[in-house]
Length: 317
Image (cartoon, rainbow, N blue to C red; front, side, top):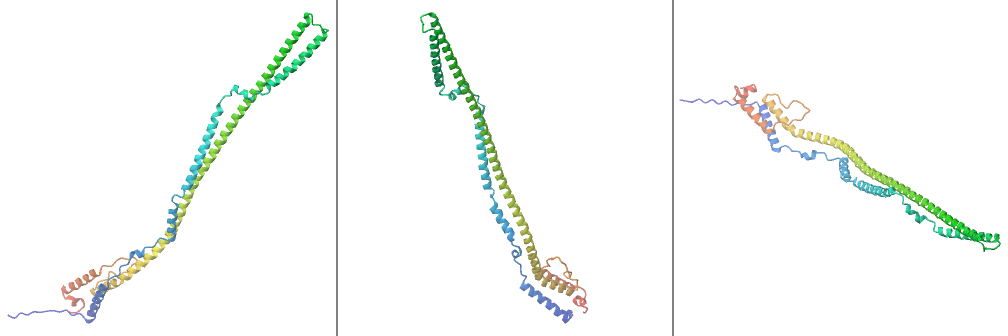
């Protein structure tokens, strides 16, 4: 029995065959050449000069306040020393007056003055005795002249003792007054010195506090300068980064363009709308070339297996 075997062959029109050949040729060339991969590090903006200066300033500013703190510590220690000296001086101002201290204020010529005064009294007594003797006619044989002389002797002895006692008492009172005055003056001088030391201690301590504050303010102002430089430098770097990012997108779009055109041609050949024909401002990576070729092959295979095959799709057969 004879077997009849029928073989159908789909023949594409020449323009479609040429189109498909060009499409496959372009696909082969693209896959052979490959896609350039950008060096992404080249598209990262460098730190701006202002940022570099800010980093340098920040590093150099670390501990810049320390000299001020060291000076402040020295002033504060000195202030405490002066305050302590004032307290020590003030301790002695509570002592009581010592009455026995008058001795060094006694007139060293007091006894000489008393002795000279006694000599004057002695001369006066001799003159009075002579007057008594002249009044009695120079006769001392009786008891009356003797009594008068004894009375005169006693009178001058009392005068000498009284005058010596008065002079010594006056000297003592003067010495006591001078001693007490000197003591009070010394106490006042000590109190004034203590107040001066305390005021000096407070002043020096205040200078130390101002030095510490100055160090902190310097550090704070330096930090503000650093932040200002970082802000300016960051804005400049952001602008540079925006330009580099735009360059990277342009490069990536240029790399994707052949694949997008190939996909568009593939979609035209298959008779379906191109998924890449819509214009958009947002970049999205295309499907890989292998998936596009695979899709093209599967589409052609599906058409060949359908009723009428490729010929029915292109209007013949």
